[in-house]
Every structure is written in structure tokens, then in C-alpha cells.
Length: 146
Image (cartoon, rainbow, N blue to C red):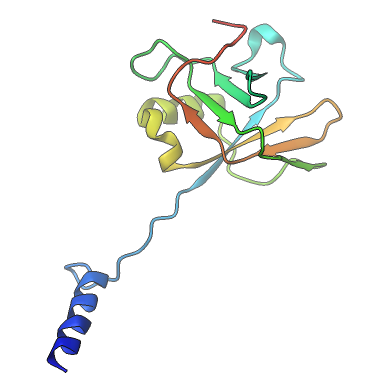
């Protein structure tokens, strides 16, 4: 019986912080970025979307803003992930290019650990492709602009 009481006290101690408040699981905020490569001329784009040799897709942002400053922040989508297609632009907290670049500078390769990052790609037929489950790449993939 005494062991049972000790076990209960142990669990009570573990689930409460030292100030008596329950520990909460931190939920990452979700941020969106509109990738509009249809309406923006090629020389004015802030990103490139391309295919990898293994049929994956990469999203490279033209900002050498993360140490060691020799590559573009790049995310990849696994070829097995099927993006959601929608007629209307999804609602969400959309970041401007400047806001995204600032967050990338601030968090570096920890960005995907701090935020649920969703890219919404505008398609030629005026529909949208919602890309989730992006992975950070620590090296520069093959891009047409270097």
C-alpha cells in the first residue's frame, strides 16, 4: 500500500510544474505561404519549385539568409505525399515574403520544428494545391537559378 502511495505522489509530481500548474503540450503555430509562380515573372520570383531525381518536389527560397549562407532554404515534399487540391485559396495565416525570410533568419534549420509550414501553390487553372508535410533540406538541391 505504501508503494502505491509513493507511486501516486511521483505521478502527481511529474505532471505538475514547480509552480503548481499543469504542464501543457506546446502546439506549433501553422503558417502559410502562397507560392504564385504563375502570376509572377521568372526574374521576380522569390522561390523555385522543381522536381528531384527521385520524383520528389523541392521548394527553394531565394534567400541566402541562414548560416553558413551558401545555400537557399529548401523544403522537399516526399513523392508519396498527395497534396490537397482546392478551388478556393484556403484560409490561414499567410506570411509575406519578408515575414517568411525573417522567420527563416531567426530559426534557421529549426524553422520546421517551430512551425507547421504549409505552402499553397497557385495552379494554372486558378485552383490551389495545398502542400503539407514538408521536410527541411540541409543542402542546396539542383535549381535552375544559383
